[in-house]
Length: 221
Length: 221
DNA sequence: AGCGGGCTTTCAGGTTGCCTTCATCAGGGA
DNA sequence: TCCCTGATGAAGGCAACCTGAAAGCCCGCT
Image 1 (cartoon, rainbow over the protein chains, first blue to last red):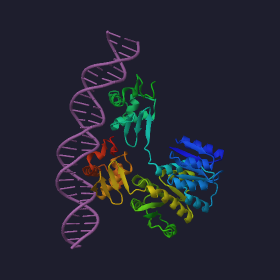
Image 2 (cartoon, rainbow over the protein chains, first blue to last red):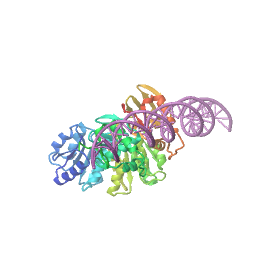
Image 3 (tube, rainbow over the protein chains, first blue to last red):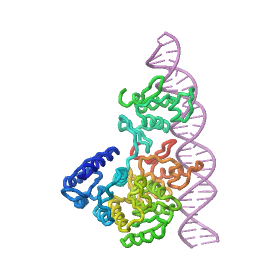
Image 4 (tube, rainbow over the protein chains, first blue to last red):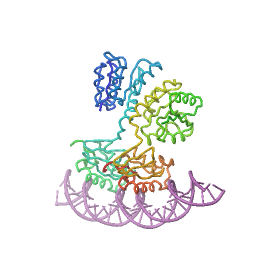
């Protein structure tokens, strides 16, 4: 799971790397064509960002050779040339996408997302805190890999904690957030649901802060 | 094997059509969004060229609904807007490529070739999840090898689940996606169809998530 | 146009399991 | 120790869901 950037200009490398890493990708870099081709052949590389103006082996040549060995890995080409004829030539040489310098890093990220979406299947959005994972689109919880069945209310309550790990929520806040009730001193629903969650997830995952509320335990404090 | 062009401007339609047909593609055209969506769902369509300014159903909305049902068909978006923010929005909405009007038909052809090259090898006309296979072109389902006949509605409903295994869909989402209805609290069609699918496929293949919706069971959760 | 058959939708009755409340128990702090 | 806050098991009520059957609709056929 990595994105390979083949580019020799220091400045571009550093800002592309920063953007991709902030977006959660692992990034490997090569500044020359021959080396870049070798790395691009590794099955660990999911996507290639390729500058055409390279020392060693030209970008076009790299692309042609890469396509012979790995026809399906997505390649996004960076170039200074913007004539229609150049674009056509590059797309036909095997580029999946094409960006003209100077470009916005946000647009590059969007194109990366678009290419990864088609190649790998989209991963559902999930929240994880210390061995506890909540699959939001699948309404499922996992504790250390094992699936745990949760009712709609239990799920809603737990997701509040996972969205704000470590934060303390009072009973009346939770009543408001999860149940939509105004404060109702007479009910102990929240307590009951906390109890149920503890039985399903393990008692130590939700801590009581006496007189204040509850908090998701991230670690052991 | 056809390319669908969803575009309402006569002039663009005719020169895009000429270009694509000269390149050897079969072309079908729709000039309005609702109709376009229906055609785009046909497994016969290999690629969609989509104008965003449409009557009926906006291009963005078409793209969103199409992605839920056919996540992998390549879509090339045509638009007049060229701000970086627009490009990003469209790529994230599910566009695979993006062209700004006015554009060269040769570049469009190059982009079509680039998209067909990648989608070609992994375009399966069948979806499989845990012993359940859906033959998209034959409108047939197979459960552990045995064929099961499905009506059009049953098929459409099941295909939503198979395109997004593990994801929960609410009754109103399904009503919207499969039936095209707005929310209608009074009907229980969805329940009836889920029931029918269970009878045909085996009860445990579709799980109820009480108070939330339904999910295709991938494995045991 | 009339007809037949399958697909779709509605309806009604039955079933399930979630939600809430209540009563009782545990445990920490003064 | 006593009191107060929180924990937990049990049970009734009820909304959500399931499903068989019948009515309605659409489409192809004659």
